[in-house]
Amino acid sequence: MAKISVRDAALAVVTGITGVAGSYMVAGSTPAFVGAPVTSAVFRSTPASIVTFSILVFGKFGKLLGFALALALTVGLFTGLVLVGFAVGRHVERRFGASVLTTGLAWGATSLLTGAPVVALGAAVPMGAVLAVLARYSASRIGSGGRAIGRRDVIGGFGLLLGFLGLAFTVGNRRTSENDPDSTNGTLDWRVEAALREAETNGLDVDGMPGLVSEENSFYEVDINIVNPTVRREDWQLAITGDVTEELTVDYGELTSKSPTYEFVTLRCVGDHLNGDLMDTGLWTVVPLAEYIDRAGPTGERVVLRGDDGYYEEFPLAALEDGYLAYELNGKPLPRKHGYPVRALVLGHWGEINVKWITEIEVLEESVKGYWEKRGWHGTGPVIPIAKLWAVNRLEGGRIRIGGHAYAGLRGIRRVEVSLDGGSTWNQTELSEPLPSRDVWRQWRYEWDATEETYDVVVRAIDGNGNVQPRGDANPYPGGAKGWVTETVEAKTE
Ligand SMILES: Nc1nc2c(c(=O)[nH]1)N[C@H]1C(S)=C(S)[C@@H](COP(=O)(O)O)O[C@H]1N2
Ligand SMILES: [Mo]
Image (spheres, helix red, strand yellow):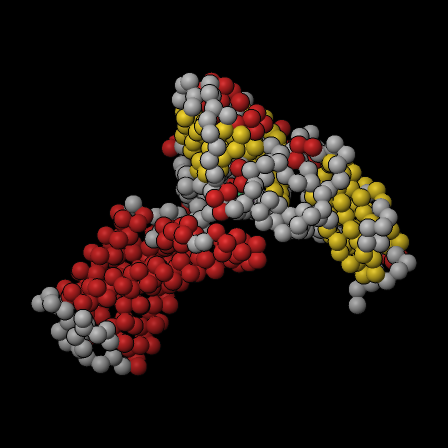
């Protein structure tokens, strides 16, 4: 095997970067971007323990880290292709042999990975162009020495590369937002407006505490992939299959021809830390699933819900008695990252069975493991009650006001109690008026005159059945964090 010169390697890396950038430029953050299948392959093949660790320890940062790794791998893949092109191109008695060959390879590989041959040209053409330019620097062919590259060439080349990266990033981002559903036109339905107003009125006033309804943009997001699917309304279909008397499909037109209801539903990820923020509430436009399930006539007792991203979760069919298909969030089309055009909502359960971009409900007779359960999680059941401490206000005259949100799924929140002495004595807190939904959080607030310097504050929820929030392993893995949120509150800030 011929040795690869440093120069060839450097040229190959630059060409590889150009290809990835070119792909992003035409595809944006959609499945047609060459980084999408590579990132999903990386996530899927990463050992469960590492995925879990990076979710729990790094949170969003872990996702970014995974993305950076996958991008590097994609660049590596393209770089390899270019080197193959160089090696073979050496034997091609044409000046542009290597460029043509490499362009073809890059196009083929990208098409195969993304299944989008036309968009794949976005990766291949810029690579070919770079190589064609580089070929001019070569006396005969790339990969066989050629004219020495001077410092000015290198600086100029870097300038061009950076310029192209900037352009690709900007244009690609625009492509990404073109794939977001249009939520700018149209006015909110009056029922949505009324419900949102009620939530606004019910909200307790504590500085820095989130409202009773989360903004679409700040609503937490957990996905198995970095790049989310792009499903068009016109193409969306839900199939009910498996152990049923009659398989059936539902499309978007049929779903939205039903008169919808509007439900406040809180979602919480089983991976949420005790006082974490993987918990949010939306006002969802929904259609009950029960009618469709009944029509299909299930003969099994388990279901698998599948999403367009390859995600799937399995749980008892009975949970779908409180199951919905949701197609709007806060009166606007579901954002792409929350499952556009349609997602499942299963009241009272951990977030993970609320499958986004839902495509199939398969009824089964026997149970199988879902995506996260294969990775050791137990997140398909009802949520564990939680009271969060999300805001501390120091008021005039040495008064302290604290507040947060409490959630217990379908059991509801009856009380939230606060201890100022590490859990020896307990005080009742004020609760926000309940919203007219069955599976929604409440806010709590507590105020006192500070006479001491520090307080060991502990917060706990009591659910609608009178059960006190359980204590136990505070680690969210595998079945959700157990315990009471505690925080040392200083009367004065230094
Ligand atoms: N198709 C699909 N659905 C999914 C997921 C996913 O990765 N893919 N993540 C699940 C998890 S773990 C949670 S906690 C919720 C989060 O919903 P959100 O991102 O809209 O907040 O979606 C669930 N539904
Ligand atoms: Mo989750």
